[in-house]
Image (cartoon, rainbow, N blue to C red; front, side, top):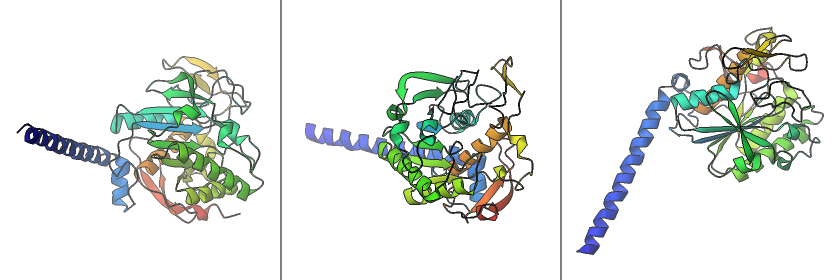
Length: 330
C-alpha cells in the first residue's frame, strides 16, 4: 500500500513539473512574441531566432572593446577621464549599447536576467594569426544594471564564461589592422571555439564592426560560418545605405558626457571622438536584438533588413539590402 502511495506521489510530481514547464514555455513564447522584433520577423517570413523560440535567457555575457566597456585606461591605450565603465562616449552611464540590450531584455523578456561585460581589446592587439583566448582570460568583468556598470572584484572573463551562460555577444575587430584575411579569420575561429568550449549551451553572436571594412566583415563572417556563430551586421554603418553622413552616429570632440542626474562630468576628447554616440549605440543594440529574435543568414549575400534605429523599443524596417551590394569579397 505504501509502495503504491509513493508511486502515485512520484508520478503526480512528474506530471506537475511537466505541466509547469509547458506553462512557463508558453508564457515566454507569448511574452517574446509581443516584442516588435518577433512580430516583424514573422511578418517577413524570417527564421526564428533564439528568443522567438521562447527561450528565457538568465545569463548574458558580452566581450568587446572600448565600444562595450572602458575604465580610466585599457589595453587600447586611450586615456578616458570617466571611470564608471560605461561604453566609451555614451551620453549617460546607461545609454550605451550593452545597457540598451540589458534594459530591453529585463523589461520585455526576463527581469531577473544577469548581464555581464568585459573589455577584451588585449585580444585585438595580439599578433595576427596568433591571437588566443588566453590573452583576455584574466580581464576584469562588470555587471550591467539598469543604471550603471558595476565592477565585480576578482571576477574575470574566464570565470564569467561557464556552462550556465545562455548568450554570448562578441564585439571585437575595431582595433585590428588586417593584413591577412585568412589568418584573422582563423583567429576568430579559435576565439569562437574557445568560447563554445567554456559555454557549451550558449548561443553566440559576433558583431561585424562599427568601424568596419570588407576585410573585417569577410574575416568574421567566414569564421561564423565554420563555427555556427551568428553574425550581426548593421547596414546603417555602411555609407549610403541609410545616410551618406555616418558622423551622425559618432561622438564629436567637445560633446558632453553626463551622469545619471544630467550633470556634465567630462567632454569628448579628440582621442575619444569617432566612437559611437547614443545614436550609434542604438544602431548596435537594434541589430543585436534583431539577431536574438530572428536568424541572420551567415553569408555575404544574405538578405539584410535595414532598421531606422531611432527607437530600440519600437524598431522600424525602412528597406532591405544585401551585404554584397556594399562589401565585396577581398
